[in-house]
Length: 115
Length: 498
Image (tube, rainbow over all chains, first blue to last red; front, side, top):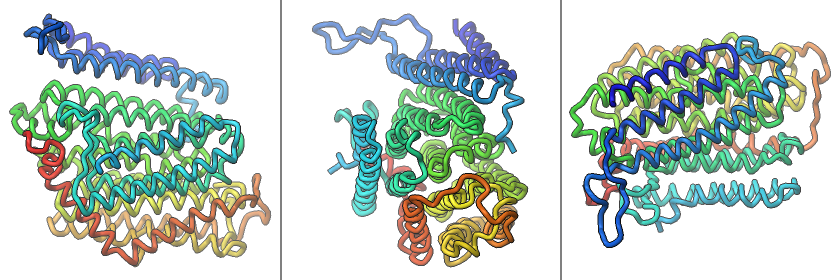
């Protein structure tokens, strides 16, 4: 399972870099989204891929039933997904405005401010 | 008493929220913006004073004890950064009264500025790695809107690069934070520092350290990942580029210094030696890039990069004097660099262009502006007795003490080229005969006073730091001492429970 997971994360990162290196700004945003997914899966994997109990304290108990899964990385991913969602929504609006203002979606031609 | 630690986050939040209630009233927005900034500055000064006299202040949010909850920690270094954020917030709010037109103000410039300040102050205060990422995102999303606000063509072109590169850096950061959690089971910086000492997988720790270096390096615009900065920082109005140039890249430097003095200190032969090379390359590439530019703000943008090199060099040399020098350098640089961008905005107001070839003759018509440009420009180049001289002196002296001669040579050479760039701006914009007598583009002198007051204020601070370098350096030395002895920070956060 871990090997499969590692391979998927690696492929997602590779795909993200490939998309970001394309010239179209739409593909740049798709690349950024894939990069985010790869990162989220990476954080999920550091919590160990195990089938333990949920970390919920049952009524009357003082601790969750051992062995239980670590809830912190899941909280981290949830936060990262929400932030990533907001930022991606902004980026999509931004590329639309860039396309309207500059008149091209080719990153190689959006270089009026480069030096 | 420790609840004062949360004020630099609460005040900008309250200011921004308050302004959303009066969205249609531009006058009221400006008043609230300036008052909120003044309150932030006052709280930051008070906090720095408390930190300096009583030691590190820690606030455990929700009273969860240290490694379990989120801690807000303020040491002298954080305190200095908060005061600088307060100064920048106040001067930018004043400057923006004239520089940011009604359209951008009505869209919410002031709320965005204060949300940006909240993110910056949060990043300076937090003692939790994941929380640091969250504050970075708060800061970034506000800065994304600020850089695109107005929607002019160069702004959109700059924004796409700024947004893409900063998003990549954030995702590298959050991946690195996740890996740290996997390795240590903690996110609290002090707790992570304790646990990493026991981790015997040196290669993994080094790999994570490199990820942090890459993430903060992109945000701080060090060699070789700085290209987004000169492509975007000169596009928005002067008030926005001043607060970006002064404060924003320095948050990356702050995070670099924080993580590489507190957490990743086990392997300095590799990490800090790499930083020395990065610092030297950053200094050189920035200053050489500036030498060929002929746009007022683009010259200044490239100089941000070369100055970042000096700060990273202070961290890389990793002696008490060098770290204190890096802190002093940040202190000096934020004031000076923001001021130069403010001056460029006034020049644009008077002549309607940033193009150095088309400018000229400003010294003949506006002597005061020439003087106000000269103070920060000479300070940036490191001419005594201004603040930049002492900052460079501390870094170069610490380099000589550990016999890193080649990098000292680079630093001195870069100082010389900085002087060249500043005299180039002086000669082109102020001294030479103008190509045409009147303004080139749209020019107006209405409300110019609002733009001049912050410039005078920052120039006075530059002179004061230069002439009264000793007290300023004492504060920086205290910050440096705390940074080179991470145990002080760890004890303050974790208390007796290690």
